[in-house]
Image (cartoon, one colour):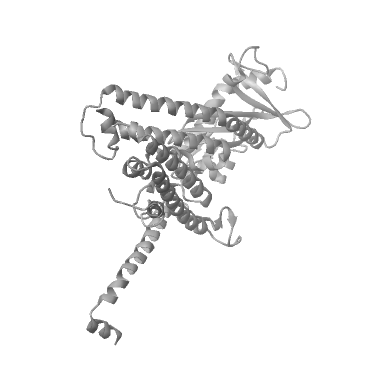
Length: 218
Length: 224
């Protein structure tokens, strides 16, 4: 088991091991419901709630869960929180609940959540598991908001429902339709990987032997 | 023994494979029972708000498909006819309800009928206004559907499609846009959304086939 500091547990999920942008987990909701910022945010918060609640319970009761039935117990716990989130959203923000449709129920099968239970919460203390869940959940919300912002601004010319460019803007409708989701995530991943690669290349330049470096400079 | 094994922490693979079956059952049973309690608790807590919202949505939808009646009443479909009152002891929630709208001078505007049938993905639930005097549809609004985003959901978002129902005469006939002759029974279906479009038309036709005679009988003593 890798030894980590509490800070690492928290920060890791936000960026370095972002569930969507790096681990490629939870892509289904990230593609399906990010056509507006409000939907993305609601989906992000609902997933955050389910992840945190599940990690807390799994980590608390890990000693009582036999190895043989752990997956079914995790799913049971996750499904309970999803149902709670589903009902609460319907009671509090019915319009968003309607827009998210079946995807709230599908949080149950979001691999990101089950993955955190199996890989982290079932092995670590409660506090660490909560930190990990917070980090991963925030990372998921960030990814959802990135998708949602790009798609709503380009596809509807608005942000959180407020028009940005005035009536003469011709919305780029493809971005609110399913193909737009693929384009958006594709370009975001392209950009991030490009940045990552450049970061990795920089120290290599410094390590070049004298002659090569001066040759480059010349 | 068991206690020792547990103190190793669940991360370590279990040394012994003989966890008694009753423990597996007990774990899942307990977790299931706790999950059930929690869900019931949340259900009870959220149900009033959900119900109130649904009633509000229905009320606005009735206003919309009857083109803003001054008021509307609930009529119950019970024992094969429309009744203003239910026999005492009946739960109104369990009986199909339709709504009859009146204008300012008390004359009947039409009936708002909610109906549901399978579409392409799942049940489509819609409400439509119906004027029994000239057998025309006053307006149609989809209340609930899970049709494909971007395609099937055009039955509620494509306003050109939705507005065709205003004034269309029943029974409705769905036609391809190219074959349209302008007949008042015709509804131009949306290209690529054939099944969902057809479902909307079928829902309206089927519910009028069933309720139409009852509506005529209900009005029989009065206007006709």
